[in-house]
Length: 368
Image 1 (cartoon, helix red, strand yellow):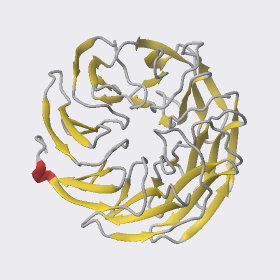
Image 2: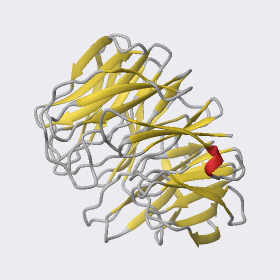
Image 3: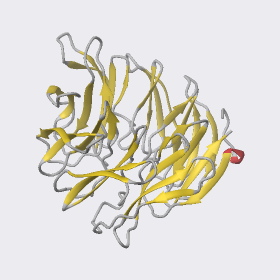
């Protein structure tokens, strides 16, 4: 909807556990990972997109593990394809990647090694070209993994010289005239390009300060451009736009902004504009190619989820569960807000004319 009101709220249903991971959608099914803080259980869950009925849930016994107060046992977003949905979580003993069918039947489970993270796990997988890609940048023994989507067999893993936890999800980037690459962001290494098929590192561009930071937001692409962010809570913050260099498999910095930019939310590219929606609710609209700031305004609320764009409207949800609709134009205009009345740190998912928002305890559906 161009305007957002209470009439757009179609249903809200309790989930079998809590968490911060976002929902994903395939057809008439919504998949989300839940957690039970008391028992440590992880609960992959499937909900009907039509009416919010719980179609199935699969409680899995896992240990209770420590994590940052802003983290949870279910901070990872699943990935989904035509036949399976892929869930992940990490405890000190092992990093689990689990494939279930759309009906909740087990397909395979992979153990990707121990997890050494001060603040707990929270990375999310992506699925592309029949591979499930998962990053585990942690305090020791960091890797980027590619697992065969049908079998769970490890196709390749790339060791990473990173000894600091990051939570950024890789994206797929295809340079002009080139092959698909994975782009991954971390504080110590900067931005790295990896050949999707082989796991070979193609390029690496250190971009960030020497003081310890953390990459949480994820990279986005538009044409030949890649935008990334990295920051620390009370320290430096960077949003950097990259473009191809003059030599094959190289990238160079096109521009950067370092004031009032997001740390945890991901930047979003819409047409020839970049929208930077910060943790404190400051929204910057900038030219994609030059970084020239068109406006810098504030919306109420604190944000940890990322904005999404539907048509000419941006939607983001603040930590108190207020959905904010903002015009995706050069003119700053709030098109409405809707209170979901539950804490939220997730990103909305949009499919089939509906928007699904996961809050701490519930799943909500918004529509025309």
